[in-house]
Image (cartoon, rainbow, N blue to C red; front, side):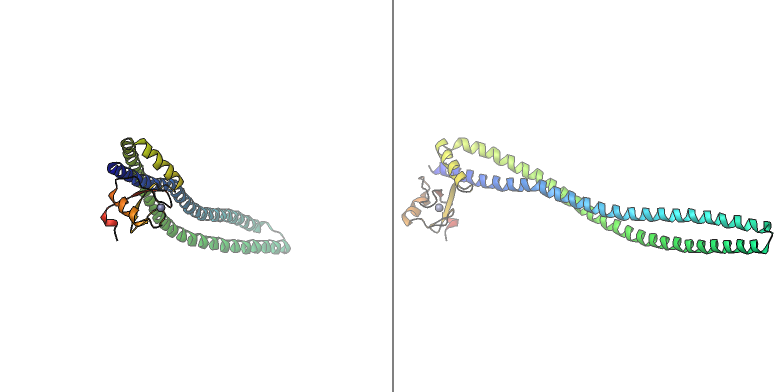
Length: 239
Ligand SMILES: [Zn+2]
Protein backbone atom coordinates (compact mmCIF):
# COMPACT_ATOMS: atom_id res chain seq x y z
CA UNK A 1 0.00 0.00 0.00
CA UNK A 2 2.85 2.34 0.83
CA UNK A 3 4.15 2.22 -2.75
CA UNK A 4 0.66 2.56 -4.14
CA UNK A 5 -0.01 5.66 -2.06
CA UNK A 6 3.32 7.11 -3.06
CA UNK A 7 2.52 6.61 -6.74
CA UNK A 8 -0.95 8.03 -6.22
CA UNK A 9 0.55 11.07 -4.52
CA UNK A 10 2.80 11.59 -7.51
CA UNK A 11 -0.19 11.21 -9.82
CA UNK A 12 -2.05 13.86 -7.87
CA UNK A 13 0.87 16.25 -8.10
CA UNK A 14 1.10 15.67 -11.84
CA UNK A 15 -2.63 16.24 -12.26
CA UNK A 16 -2.39 19.55 -10.41
CA UNK A 17 0.51 20.55 -12.60
CA UNK A 18 -1.44 19.55 -15.70
CA UNK A 19 -4.33 21.68 -14.48
CA UNK A 20 -2.20 24.78 -14.12
CA UNK A 21 -0.40 24.10 -17.42
CA UNK A 22 -3.78 23.84 -19.11
CA UNK A 23 -4.95 27.11 -17.58
CA UNK A 24 -1.84 28.77 -18.90
CA UNK A 25 -2.25 27.13 -22.31
CA UNK A 26 -5.79 28.45 -22.47
CA UNK A 27 -4.60 31.94 -21.62
CA UNK A 28 -1.98 32.13 -24.36
CA UNK A 29 -4.23 32.57 -27.40
CA UNK A 30 -6.04 35.38 -25.58
CA UNK A 31 -2.73 37.06 -24.85
CA UNK A 32 -1.68 36.73 -28.49
CA UNK A 33 -4.99 38.30 -29.48
CA UNK A 34 -4.36 41.22 -27.13
CA UNK A 35 -0.94 41.78 -28.69
CA UNK A 36 -2.48 41.72 -32.17
CA UNK A 37 -5.00 44.29 -31.06
CA UNK A 38 -2.36 46.58 -29.59
CA UNK A 39 -0.36 46.30 -32.79
CA UNK A 40 -3.38 47.09 -34.90
CA UNK A 41 -4.26 50.18 -32.84
CA UNK A 42 -0.71 51.52 -33.08
CA UNK A 43 -0.58 51.04 -36.84
CA UNK A 44 -4.00 52.53 -37.33
CA UNK A 45 -3.10 55.65 -35.36
CA UNK A 46 -0.03 56.30 -37.49
CA UNK A 47 -1.98 55.52 -40.63
CA UNK A 48 -4.50 58.24 -39.74
CA UNK A 49 -1.73 60.76 -39.27
CA UNK A 50 -0.16 59.81 -42.59
CA UNK A 51 -3.52 60.21 -44.30
CA UNK A 52 -3.88 63.66 -42.80
CA UNK A 53 -0.52 64.70 -44.24
CA UNK A 54 -1.47 63.25 -47.63
CA UNK A 55 -4.75 65.10 -47.62
CA UNK A 56 -3.00 68.39 -46.86
CA UNK A 57 -0.48 67.73 -49.64
CA UNK A 58 -3.40 67.30 -51.98
CA UNK A 59 -4.97 70.58 -50.83
CA UNK A 60 -1.65 72.29 -51.41
CA UNK A 61 -1.33 70.92 -54.96
CA UNK A 62 -4.87 72.02 -55.75
CA UNK A 63 -4.23 75.52 -54.47
CA UNK A 64 -0.99 75.74 -56.42
CA UNK A 65 -2.72 74.63 -59.63
CA UNK A 66 -5.41 77.21 -59.03
CA UNK A 67 -2.80 79.90 -58.40
CA UNK A 68 -0.92 79.21 -61.59
CA UNK A 69 -4.18 79.30 -63.58
CA UNK A 70 -4.96 82.66 -62.05
CA UNK A 71 -1.49 83.92 -62.86
CA UNK A 72 -2.14 83.00 -66.47
CA UNK A 73 -5.28 85.10 -66.32
CA UNK A 74 -3.25 88.08 -65.12
CA UNK A 75 -0.78 87.65 -67.95
CA UNK A 76 -3.58 87.55 -70.46
CA UNK A 77 -5.21 90.62 -68.94
CA UNK A 78 -1.91 92.45 -69.04
CA UNK A 79 -1.53 91.42 -72.68
CA UNK A 80 -4.81 93.11 -73.43
CA UNK A 81 -3.57 96.43 -72.04
CA UNK A 82 -2.06 97.48 -75.38
CA UNK A 83 -5.33 96.77 -77.16
CA UNK A 84 -7.58 99.04 -75.07
CA UNK A 85 -8.90 102.09 -76.82
CA UNK A 86 -10.65 104.14 -74.15
CA UNK A 87 -9.72 105.31 -70.72
CA UNK A 88 -12.80 103.58 -69.33
CA UNK A 89 -11.70 100.24 -70.76
CA UNK A 90 -8.23 100.85 -69.42
CA UNK A 91 -9.54 101.56 -65.90
CA UNK A 92 -11.77 98.49 -66.02
CA UNK A 93 -8.84 96.27 -67.02
CA UNK A 94 -6.64 97.72 -64.28
CA UNK A 95 -9.35 97.01 -61.72
CA UNK A 96 -9.66 93.45 -62.99
CA UNK A 97 -5.90 92.90 -62.80
CA UNK A 98 -5.75 94.36 -59.28
CA UNK A 99 -8.56 92.11 -58.13
CA UNK A 100 -6.82 89.05 -59.61
CA UNK A 101 -3.52 90.01 -57.99
CA UNK A 102 -5.19 90.48 -54.64
CA UNK A 103 -6.92 87.11 -54.88
CA UNK A 104 -3.61 85.50 -55.80
CA UNK A 105 -1.77 86.99 -52.91
CA UNK A 106 -4.46 85.59 -50.60
CA UNK A 107 -4.00 82.21 -52.27
CA UNK A 108 -0.23 82.40 -51.77
CA UNK A 109 -0.86 83.14 -48.11
CA UNK A 110 -3.10 80.12 -47.83
CA UNK A 111 -0.53 77.90 -49.52
CA UNK A 112 2.11 79.02 -47.04
CA UNK A 113 -0.20 78.21 -44.17
CA UNK A 114 -0.85 74.72 -45.52
CA UNK A 115 2.87 74.19 -45.96
CA UNK A 116 3.50 75.21 -42.37
CA UNK A 117 0.83 72.82 -41.22
CA UNK A 118 2.35 70.01 -43.28
CA UNK A 119 5.81 70.69 -41.84
CA UNK A 120 4.42 70.61 -38.32
CA UNK A 121 2.54 67.38 -38.93
CA UNK A 122 5.52 65.73 -40.56
CA UNK A 123 7.67 66.58 -37.58
CA UNK A 124 5.07 65.01 -35.25
CA UNK A 125 4.71 62.08 -37.57
CA UNK A 126 8.37 61.22 -37.66
CA UNK A 127 8.47 61.44 -33.87
CA UNK A 128 5.44 59.17 -33.63
CA UNK A 129 6.89 56.75 -36.14
CA UNK A 130 10.01 56.42 -34.05
CA UNK A 131 7.88 55.85 -30.95
CA UNK A 132 5.77 53.32 -32.77
CA UNK A 133 8.89 51.49 -33.93
CA UNK A 134 9.84 51.06 -30.29
CA UNK A 135 6.36 49.98 -29.27
CA UNK A 136 6.05 47.48 -32.10
CA UNK A 137 9.45 46.08 -31.25
CA UNK A 138 8.31 45.62 -27.67
CA UNK A 139 5.14 43.91 -28.80
CA UNK A 140 7.14 41.57 -31.02
CA UNK A 141 9.41 40.79 -28.09
CA UNK A 142 6.39 39.91 -25.98
CA UNK A 143 5.02 37.79 -28.78
CA UNK A 144 8.26 35.89 -29.08
CA UNK A 145 8.38 35.27 -25.34
CA UNK A 146 4.80 34.09 -25.41
CA UNK A 147 5.51 31.72 -28.27
CA UNK A 148 8.47 30.30 -26.39
CA UNK A 149 6.26 29.85 -23.36
CA UNK A 150 3.72 28.04 -25.52
CA UNK A 151 6.35 25.64 -26.78
CA UNK A 152 7.59 25.00 -23.24
CA UNK A 153 4.02 24.60 -22.02
CA UNK A 154 3.36 22.03 -24.70
CA UNK A 155 6.52 20.16 -23.79
CA UNK A 156 5.71 20.21 -20.07
CA UNK A 157 2.19 19.00 -20.85
CA UNK A 158 3.42 16.08 -22.96
CA UNK A 159 6.04 15.03 -20.41
CA UNK A 160 3.48 14.92 -17.63
CA UNK A 161 0.94 13.13 -19.76
CA UNK A 162 3.51 10.45 -20.50
CA UNK A 163 4.41 10.08 -16.83
CA UNK A 164 0.72 10.00 -15.98
CA UNK A 165 0.21 7.14 -18.39
CA UNK A 166 2.98 5.13 -16.73
CA UNK A 167 1.71 5.86 -13.21
CA UNK A 168 -1.86 5.00 -14.07
CA UNK A 169 -0.70 1.56 -15.13
CA UNK A 170 1.33 1.04 -11.96
CA UNK A 171 -1.49 1.93 -9.61
CA UNK A 172 -4.26 -0.57 -8.95
CA UNK A 173 -7.19 0.24 -11.15
CA UNK A 174 -9.57 0.31 -8.18
CA UNK A 175 -7.46 2.97 -6.53
CA UNK A 176 -7.19 4.98 -9.74
CA UNK A 177 -10.96 4.82 -10.10
CA UNK A 178 -11.53 6.01 -6.53
CA UNK A 179 -9.01 8.79 -6.99
CA UNK A 180 -10.59 9.86 -10.27
CA UNK A 181 -14.06 10.01 -8.75
CA UNK A 182 -12.86 12.01 -5.75
CA UNK A 183 -10.85 14.33 -7.97
CA UNK A 184 -13.86 15.09 -10.13
CA UNK A 185 -16.04 15.83 -7.13
CA UNK A 186 -13.43 17.78 -5.17
CA UNK A 187 -12.03 20.50 -7.48
CA UNK A 188 -9.32 18.31 -8.96
CA UNK A 189 -7.94 17.11 -5.63
CA UNK A 190 -8.44 13.48 -4.61
CA UNK A 191 -5.36 12.94 -2.45
CA UNK A 192 -4.24 15.45 0.15
CA UNK A 193 -1.50 15.72 2.70
CA UNK A 194 -2.12 16.19 6.38
CA UNK A 195 -0.30 18.81 8.36
CA UNK A 196 -0.64 19.45 12.09
CA UNK A 197 -3.55 17.03 12.29
CA UNK A 198 -5.37 19.01 9.64
CA UNK A 199 -6.57 17.76 6.26
CA UNK A 200 -5.03 20.04 3.63
CA UNK A 201 -8.05 19.60 1.40
CA UNK A 202 -10.83 20.84 3.63
CA UNK A 203 -8.74 22.19 6.54
CA UNK A 204 -10.73 20.29 9.13
CA UNK A 205 -8.95 18.51 11.96
CA UNK A 206 -8.58 14.76 11.75
CA UNK A 207 -8.75 12.65 14.93
CA UNK A 208 -5.31 12.23 16.60
CA UNK A 209 -5.37 8.45 16.24
CA UNK A 210 -6.12 8.79 12.53
CA UNK A 211 -3.28 11.27 12.18
CA UNK A 212 -0.90 8.71 13.63
CA UNK A 213 -2.18 6.09 11.21
CA UNK A 214 -1.91 8.43 8.24
CA UNK A 215 1.75 9.05 9.00
CA UNK A 216 2.47 5.40 8.41
CA UNK A 217 1.20 5.68 4.84
CA UNK A 218 0.35 2.01 4.71
CA UNK A 219 -3.43 2.07 4.67
CA UNK A 220 -6.04 3.80 2.61
CA UNK A 221 -7.41 6.43 5.00
CA UNK A 222 -9.90 9.04 3.95
CA UNK A 223 -10.70 12.36 5.52
CA UNK A 224 -13.87 11.98 7.62
CA UNK A 225 -14.97 15.40 6.48
CA UNK A 226 -14.20 15.70 2.74
CA UNK A 227 -13.64 12.01 1.93
CA UNK A 228 -10.34 12.64 0.20
CA UNK A 229 -7.53 10.11 0.48
CA UNK A 230 -5.04 11.25 3.11
CA UNK A 231 -1.31 11.10 2.56
CA UNK A 232 1.63 11.78 4.81
CA UNK A 233 4.15 13.81 2.86
CA UNK A 234 7.08 13.43 5.23
CA UNK A 235 8.40 15.15 8.31
CA UNK A 236 9.02 18.42 6.55
CA UNK A 237 5.30 19.07 6.75
CA UNK A 238 5.28 18.77 10.51
CA UNK A 239 4.94 21.90 12.55
ZN1 LIG B 1 -10.64 16.81 4.32
